Image (cartoon, rainbow, N blue to C red):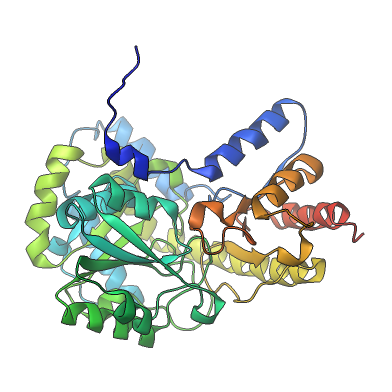
Amino acid sequence: MTFSQLASRLDNIAPFHVMELAKMAAALERQGRHIIHMGIGEPDFTAAPLVIEAAAKAMADGKMQYTSATGLPALREAISAHYRRVFGLDIAPGRIVVTAGASAALLLACAALVEKGSEVLMPDPSYPCNRHFVAAFDGQAKMIASGPEQRFQLSDRMVQEHWGEHTRGVLLASPSNPTGTSILHSELAKIIATVRGKGGYSIVDEIYQGLSYEGEPFSALSLGDDIIVINSFSKYFNMTGWRLGWMVLPESLVAPIEKLAQNLFICPSAIAQHAALACFEPASLALYEERRSEFKRRRDYLVPALVELGFKVPVLPDGAFYVYADCSGLLKEGDDADKFVKEALNQAGVSMVSGLDFGPYTAQHYIRLSYATSMENLQEAVRRLGQFLGKS
């Protein structure tokens, strides 16, 4: 059976090229090739031992029934305590809504705030699903070209210049996928003040916030209680497939979001929620910090190695586990970054991602490399890329 009348909003949602490249890599592996995966952003670490034990105990104890749509009270309290311990912020547990991953949190935020024809400002480049969440509710993501001079992020000046009649808010990510760069605290404060002054909303994706490597950590929540912050157990807590995240909301948004969550998701995974309580045990937190240090070690190896090969890394990534590198100096005449990563995959067995997914501004000349793999793999990838480029 075929459907001839699909919803027109699908026309505004592009394929996810990252996943297409992953399928190409999988096909090569089925042929017996050894592929080093530096494409998909997924920690090579798994959930902490105490988390796995907590999940097994929850199942053994039969704790698998529906929870509240907003999440287990104990987990909301634990997240609140986490903000107090790490950032010195008092976030009421009642403002925290546990979600089926950060994707569900962003979906709920857009369902509550995006109207047909309204605009949401975001940087180009940015995570592709963010603009598609807006499109899913018939809004328009207004992508603003953001280069290395702006750390690939929006600035307050850019927000003021591009705010138009139909603009309703901004969707930011700090640290960002694909660039690994954060918005400076002072600049973020200006942006939020500008948006507030225009009666708009600020959504800040902080799913990589725990993986920050420079300076003192901070959350956008320190800038006011009218900000919507998204976070996740996937990255810092190494629980990608568990599909668990959370959002911190202004009090006035909690009831509307709860109503949407009840209807769209019923509740997040009960097992994942019970397991996630163990994320905040001292032994788990110590392990996460060790892993964060390992990610920094990998970054500090990979960035200069890429520069040595001829890539340009105009902004040192200060968070997440990505390097956003300019490959323009390595391209053959007429080639672009997409062709470059496909040739590198086929010839060198190194899987990377072009800028194609992240917006048109950097699509032709930038690639994203994930260092969420072992140091041994990174070293081998650099060796293979050196051979591929004729530099070793």
